[in-house]
Image (cartoon, rainbow, N blue to C red; front, side, top):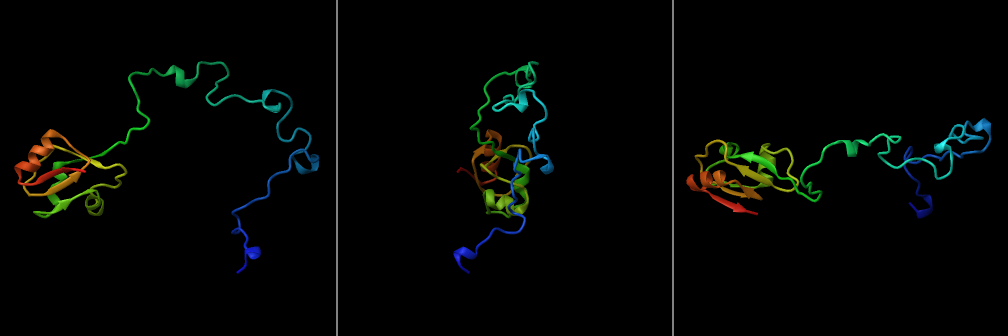
Length: 146
């Protein structure tokens, strides 16, 4: 195979429409823009979210507080979900994914205190609630923040 023999996979590219090349093409004269109006002009059109002068949805909805767009949301699991692991096991995000407790874990997980724990486990999580930490340590395990 040579560089001059390379070509894109079938169907991955398409020929662009040539606008304004006669009415036989189906895109002649007005070139698919219709007759006159704001959207027919060059540079015409409206900004994203414009609703023709009506108060836009983004401004109609009440806002309160602060929404951190850089927040990294944690998955939540309860202490009761840890009961399925063997005594003395080390539980981290990958272990939970493999066991099917978590379906995804992008930024880590937080252990919450709902349920009971009878086994001594070493749990490595991004965060623990006070109740969860107490229950894990009461069962003889360790709660490590990763």
